[in-house]
Image (cartoon, rainbow over all chains, first blue to last red; front, side, top):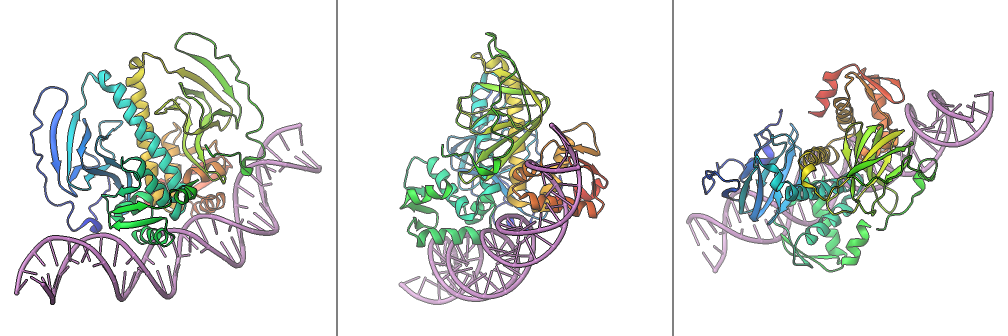
Length: 217
Length: 217
DNA sequence: CGAGACTTTGAACCCACTCAATGCCCGTGG
DNA sequence: CCACGGGCATTGAGTGGGTTCAAAGTCTCG
């Protein structure tokens, strides 16, 4: 794969080699708990894949890179969710911890049928989310994308009204197919319109749900 | 769902009520073969979903609509493929035949485990395709999108070099998140550069594979 | 051969990007 | 405690690729 390490990720995130906190030793079918600090790589495109990953706490970004460094985050995952499904035992994407994250590795059992009902269900949820995100990337403008993002993040958290965003503006931009400047400008515009309040850099309070919903349909 | 019939689809495709050629009667677990002429609806967003669909011949588009008529095709499917996976027994998308198409309906069996291994595999293939398409829609320009499209269509057909495109320019545009004018302009540019030849309106011959590949990475 | 549907081409516009500078937050050290 | 610094985030000005609007061309099927 002609995928290269790019300058944009230079600083803090990729270099430190991470040691998983527990050994992947047990001979049963699910095991191995690992802690990943912010920015740590969980797996890389091209690696062999024989596991799924369940998040115990924290958050994960799954993404792809072009040779010139353009990045598309295909999904965010949060506590309780499972990710890392692959069709052919090869990882087609990169996965990194967004913040301090603990992950349980679910080794794909040879007796796959036992789990496949549950796995199928979770994979299908990922499929529907990805296909719905195609509409956002293909057909919605910047304002609609951010509105859709805030709505999605809110729906995936228990606390309604106050949204915690563990990811940076660059992560949001790379998820929405925008630049950080555009994301920032849209946040500002929503703030000026009184639709949201930025209670912290990574916390958003939605003041006018109706206005937000009206933007995405 | 606030999805409305839009003016763009006015003319030929949606109105004629289609009658499936065979009754969905049998009491076993997989049955009901149906023929769909070009433009016929296979299922609609919001309908109950208790089946998958296997294409015997023909081609299908799966898409979503916004209230104002903007459309995003999330996937094309061809002979031999299975589509219509849903996470929660409700269709989240529309599916239509692109051309004359025959479809076998696979009723989701209550003993889902028997099929789930195979179904899981096909669903995962759809998932990987959708996630890879996110990169195209989020981060690639018009030329790169068309090059990726031609490459994908070629890889999914046996005949290399000559690509059959059953779908219209509008379908291609709505798959790539572009307008028909842009798609047409890019085709023209590729033709002028000698990269492709348009042997028919719906047939493309690739003259310079290397140039095409160079565009997408 | 005519009509409608689809495609191609042209010209002007606009939204998001690029480039650039400033601001903010927080951890670190004097 | 405050000054400094680095990493993000915000804001501004100008540019450009794709869209929009419009018209001409082409294919197909009665």
